[in-house]
Length: 119
Image (cartoon, rainbow, N blue to C red):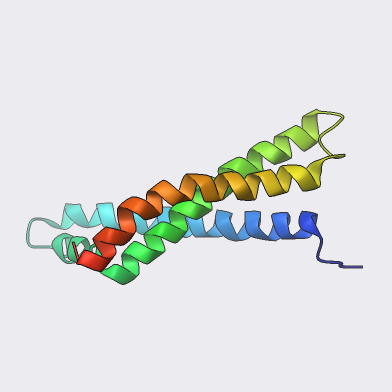
């Protein structure tokens, strides 16, 4: 029975963040491939789009997804290769959330003023 405990939330967020990272990488590869169309191609239009505030907010979410996915992957490794990892998996997951937040604060400190200033 699904109870919505920490393990299920960690699994769900790990999958969502993985899909978000994969979609961002696909977008990045498609964007870089536009350079091959020459100097008059749509590459400059994409660069201008990337500086708009909606894309910057999406970039913040992708950064959060990468940080969470990496730290949760380390949590999964600890659970798989240690005898004590499963016993404290709940605390490890909360640690992942705290570390993701602590790492995200400096990112927000830099990017949010740029979004508000329209840089």
